[in-house]
Length: 352
Image (cartoon, rainbow, N blue to C red; front, side, top):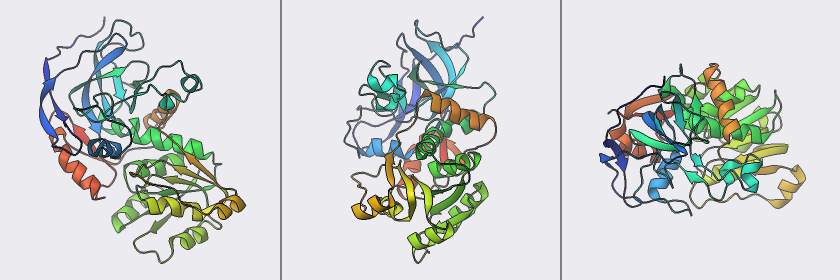
């Protein structure tokens, strides 16, 4: 017999009414799930750099306004639409960036669901996880094991899935070098661990002694501090004896992204993940051709990538360095994020 939950009419949430405007922590209505959706009582939500971009309106894709942001929500299924058969009341479920897709276009049919032209995006075109109750399409919602730590699993739903997919996109072999640019942040700290679990050698790039310590503790063999290095490109090429076989760019520095093409090894793969507003990749065509490097974009992950990324977590191969604060603290978290002062990930407790 399935469990039942008493669902209130209103809830606490963080909402903004215009890009860059005040983020209000206030009472808002609890949404009603559509026939194909589940209603999740969100207990924890990670905060992603994408959430900051959504609030600021940085990208050439209009956000839903007013908007409740967030797309790393972990909680309990408390209601479901009449057509939902893949979840039961009481199951643990996760809210991802990809809230829903058409499942019938050429991209969905080949597993590239995030690239669907009709994709519905949590915390962007669909109210997300910065609230106590949120809806998610049952097909795309993540299945979370019942014994999982929901605070710890929340960042896996975007940061973990995103970097895991990026590493798959790099298509590297065990023993090869992967350079992670922006390694001390929320995505980078997970990328180090996934890379190690996949048998890769990790060179971490970031700035500051605290990030050096964090990256080394997570398994990075070598750390390049761009604030201290006399020649970042030369140092990386020497440390890897020829350059990185693959580069995962999770930083939001346009200069760092372009620089990654210089220290990529011959036949190296440069994977773009971070999305600084208006940024471009600039590299010499001659060098790119002669080195035969590949520049690839990697955009979150599909359902298979999500299940695999969660499996690494539940087997204890990766963990998300995180700090829990109350949902009402979201504006402060955004401020720290904009200043580049966050180690690992902030996770919001929706009860505070």
